[in-house]
Amino acid sequence: MRSSNPVFSRRGFGRDNGYAGFNTAPQAGGPAVATQANPYAQPTGNPYAQNPYAQQDLQHGAPPQAPATTGRMTIDDVVMRTGTTLGVLIVTAALSWALLPVDDAHISRSYGIGIGAALIGMVLAFVQSFKRKASPALILTYAAFEGVFLGVISSIVDNRIADGAAMQAVIGTMAVFAGVLVAYKAGWIRVNRRFYGFVMAAALGFILLMAVNLLFAVFGGGDGLGFRSGALGVVFGVVGIILGACFLALDFKQVEDGIAYGAPREEAWLAAFGLTLTLVWIYLEFLRLISILSSSD
Image (tube, rainbow, N blue to C red; front, side, top):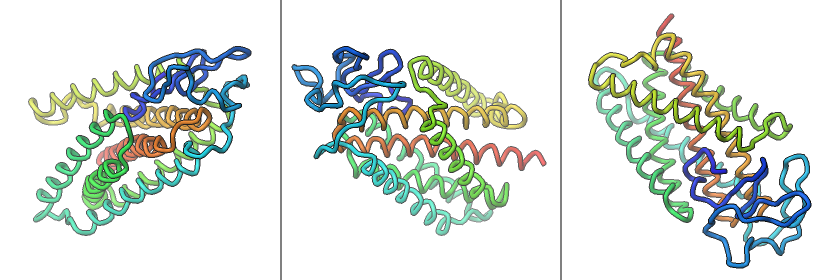
């Protein structure tokens, strides 16, 4: 099964019967069976099969724990890379908030810089998504430009639409992250093929509707079909946050699988990149939802 984030979609994680593996899907009581091509695959099958955990049976739907091995991804690697990526994003967001005023005399220039930074960040995200290996410099550059965009758009919403909206969106994003992490670790969320298929189908429909709404807004003016304003905007904002939470569960599963099945340490940067994409999605949905609710008062 492929991940929700494009950064993982080209990686060699596979799932079978609700379980996951790196290049292989271990079957309970049986040998690992290859599931799909993987840039780290070797002719002999699973390149990590010599590790004891690769031959263990899965219990309760959770992959076995990988022993400490030099050059393999660990949870500490993921935490450090994610913290670094988010740190760069937060710093540039704070700088753009402070240095790009959004008063009547400067809002057009600041908004233009923010949109330009968003487009550059989008291009960098696509470039990294299609690269076979992680590029820390590219990922951190993406985070920097994405931070500029978030700083500008957050300042506009906070200063001109809803006072305190940015902090509320940050708290909401942190709450969703913590809630999904607790639910995932407690086993309340089971990530399997059915879950993945449902989330991806819902996400595709959501994105298509937003694209249609944007086209109507561009060529017809106003709010398009109204999917991003009023009562419908509130509904779609909530749906967007729920989808973001589902993406987080998929990302947590991919990180867990990568650690358990001996993914190379460089994959930690990709995990950080994927988590950052999802957290930005959730934050923006919260920000939009708060602005809609404040405008309707």
